[in-house]
Length: 115
Figure 1 (cartoon, helix red, strand yellow):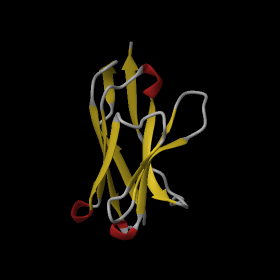
Figure 2 (cartoon, one colour):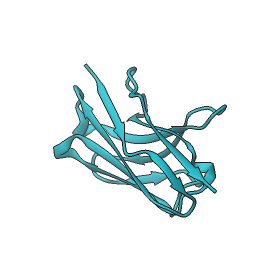
Figure 3 (cartoon, rainbow, N blue to C red):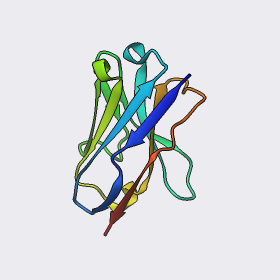
C-alpha cells in the first residue's frame, strides 16, 4: 500500500530557507521518477521539481535557481531544499511520482512565506 509522508513545512520569512522531506513506503521508490508538487489556495496543483532515479533534475521556471530537489534511495526519501523563498511560494507541498502519480497522495506539508 502506497504511503507518502511529507514534512518540513512551516512559516518562513521571504528570503529564508526550508527543507522539505517526503518518505515513501509500499512503492518501488528507487526506480520511480519523483516530483514535488504544490497547490496554493484557490489554484490547481502544479509540478515544481522532478528527479529521475539517476538524479537528473528538472525545475519549473518559477523556482529554478532557488529550489533543489534530491533523493536518497536507501531511505526511500525525496527532499526539496527551498532557498530565497517568496510569498508566492506559499502552498501545500506534496510529493508523488511521474509521469502518472500514485492514486494515493500524502497530506502534504504547508509552507507559508511572509513578506
